[in-house]
Image 1: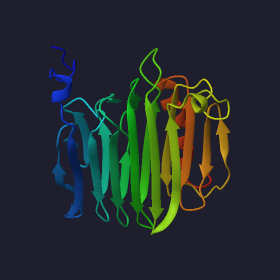
Image 2 (image 1 turned 90 degrees about the horizontal axis):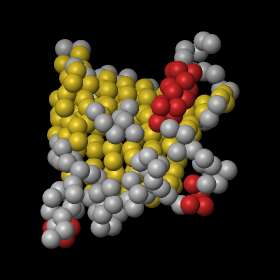
Image 3 (image 1 turned 60 degrees about the vertical axis):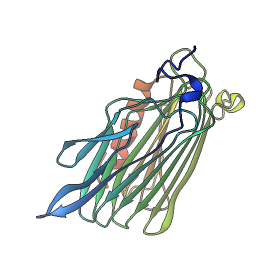
Amino acid sequence: MTTDALSGLPPAARRAMRARAFVATSLSGGRTVVSGLGSAPPLTFRQTGARTVHLVSTAAGPLGGDRLRLDLDVAPGTSLEVGSVASTLVLPGEGESHLLITARVGAGASLRFTPEPTVLAAGCSHRLTVRLALAADARVLWREEIMFGRYGERPGRCHARFDATSDGRPLLRQEHVVGDLALDTSPAIYATARCVGTTLVTPGPACREAVVGDGVAVLPLAGPGVLVSALAPDAVALRDRLEWGEALASAPSGAG
């Protein structure tokens, strides 16, 4: 009998996962407290600091057919940092997998969201949706990195959608599609790049001029924020380029 190499079960025996994880903060004595923390495999949170949590993979996934949800609620006046201990490997399966991330960042609050990259394994079909709602004076650094397959393989397909609002007004609407051969190899899209990444920084410096470097662009938005976009041949170069742009986007007004 053939079995799934990841679960050890016959292919037909695996059921698509439905899982939700959440993090919520609150103020206690003027300090940030992680007051809510919920997990469900493969989305498992571990608190690693007073205001820091990390995602730990406790099951393979997402696989085709999985429906996963991650909710972040950063209360007014608090701060939260979210990371992950390893990259997320998206695997093929029956149908499309979907990860929905919602985040609410209250007045005077700050959120730093910097998970490790998402890797699109050959044959996968994945949808990533982010909905970010910011108060007018909220501070955010939100980084996303997508790798076009593992070493030496073509990527699976991914449709990534990012929607951010500030004080109820649209701040950023952005989509990426990976896994379409015509788009992946187009010199106007990805060309020879093997990964793509973006970082949203709010509120950003007062400087309203775009800055372009080697494989990276720093673009002030119409609202209170800056978008850093980068392409690179590998994950190390992508991270270097994004961090270069993030440093510019986070610099105080008039610096550098």
